Length: 353
Ligand SMILES: [Mn+2]
Image 1 (cartoon, protein in one colour):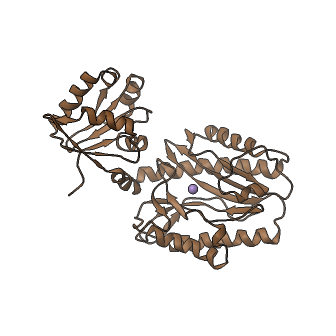
Image 2 (cartoon, protein in one colour; image 1 turned 120 degrees about the vertical axis):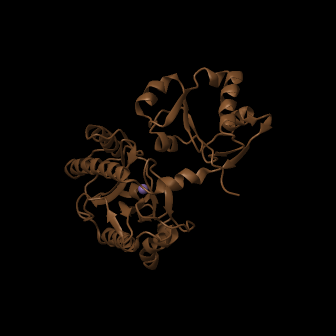
Image 3 (cartoon, rainbow, N blue to C red; image 1 turned 45 degrees about the vertical axis):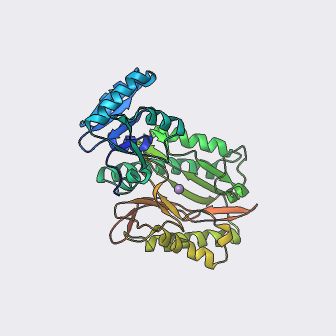
């Protein structure tokens, strides 16, 4: 049986994608002939000013708290569009909210059928429009401006802490036009870099430290993501060896990625170099991920993801090697996948010094 054509959209980034609405409370109903956005009084003005023209805006301030009125309004719409099956986003819809919808969703006294369509919008979102590609590229340009400034700070200042750098990243992002960060910056000095997702703390920068910075911005809600590992002073031979291995792995992966390759195959090509060098156990995370309105979205570059990566998808490639208690290296770029290969959207040097 085909998936239902009427969809209840509750995932905020999907709502943004389909309507351009960015408020924190709301949901959408998509039918064959009409799209509705439901939100409350706090967001009505914003919605009126931003949503796409073909969407009907419905104020739920009063009706959401009044079960009788809500039921009548909702059922009127169900009836109008003859909705007997409704797609819901199980990945996002809470049980509490689902129960509410279930209670009010009857047509001619008969309960409508709910079916999971979590992947439907995610799949549409994989392929980026020219406008989206522009926004993501711009987001990365801002990210790079910020990175260059904090790199300079790290290389010239001493005794500064990870958390101070993390805050600088956020402030500079705002200064250069980001509307938000895409995730809390990861700033790791010295042996803290051996934890792939270290939480910046009060560790002070030391002479000859290895530094891992993983950061991203949002520009008009579109995310960027980049990791660089570099050295304050001279790396030791072991650090340099590991650095070059990670870079080789990333390059090998990037050289193989083009439209049509599966996520698993892409991940395999990234991993191969590291595995062959005997470091499989020190590289536990996926090879990369799709990026867009969400920092992590479909597709995934990982062992169990057997779907193809399509042209005009934007992905990250981020291999790493983490030597417990000693140090870690990760290098991450963003790529625009094309029919013949890919275009690297990340312009920051990968020379470690
Ligand atoms: Mn990433």
